[in-house]
Length: 321
Length: 121
Image (tube, rainbow over the protein chains, first blue to last red):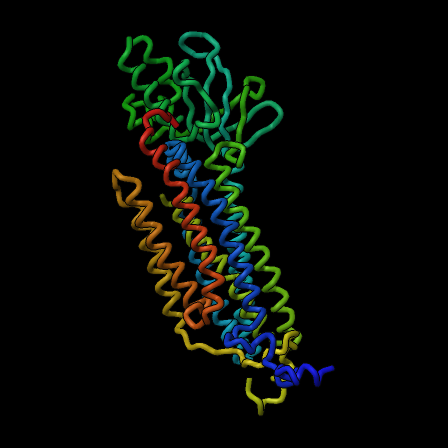
């Protein structure tokens, strides 16, 4: 049967070109696979980024105010940690290709440590957000002796069954039909501005009234009722009776579209970092066992550099602009 | 990689599809790339503190620097500079789709910019 094929001008199998590498491109199939995976990852991240763009363009003020809460220093350190881990990963791939097991082990180890460092910093960042409360509580206004809703924004210092202690700012809730109040929109910055405006308007109003709302900022800045003064020294500790609390919201993804975007983007990126740690640990264990897998190290390296690349875009988009 | 080095061949993993090409080795000064990335990161942070009325300028500056950094990572750390046509072919598809998606968002973003006065938040 094979002879009849030969008669028709086909090559015998042993002379046929290699089905995988014989078509002019020497790229190993594993590398093609990892690049295909990264291509799908690009589309995964751009879809979430597109959602972020739409949310942001729809609520620029909300995004600008809440971005102030993010810790630029920690994120900057994290950027350098990831870039450093990319460097050691590149050196690890280099060592694997030179079959230098000792160097490979060292560089893989440093890369994993950097990855853990990134996740630890991320943990503290998340913790900072999840202990930041916005609270609406009804207190008796000292001047008018009427029950008045106040909005508080700040870090939770302590809490028990009876009370919440919050270090931050507070202002009277103001709302109208044209301008309704929504706790999801309130940032530390906007509460501070509101408090400063209320203190300012109280000071410029009748003198006997000035004692009333000024007291909350007066404790910190008793000298002046000017808005920028209240702005400078407005942060203080507030003890809130939990029975008076009507709304309590932390800076989690449930807070508003900004935090939803922030936690989704950094969260899926964090999951990718964890995935990288798993892959790197497998390589490190193999290296301890005396095995150097040069192509596999290269593929894990490609993935790890991609994770770094995503963070390069997330850092300015979320924290800086 | 060395044929005379007997231990290296025993530790060499078996490629299922019989790849015979030796693992390519590229000479890149990784430390120089790292230095460039650190400098660009500092520039990004610095640029964020420039006060401009137009937010779009800030966004474009930040995205431009991020793109340069991403190119550094892709071309040197990820060895894209040394890859064949096939990898570029794989990569160009999602990149085109990314640009398509972003351009498709421009009408919505411009709506937000033009009618900003109607949004309090």
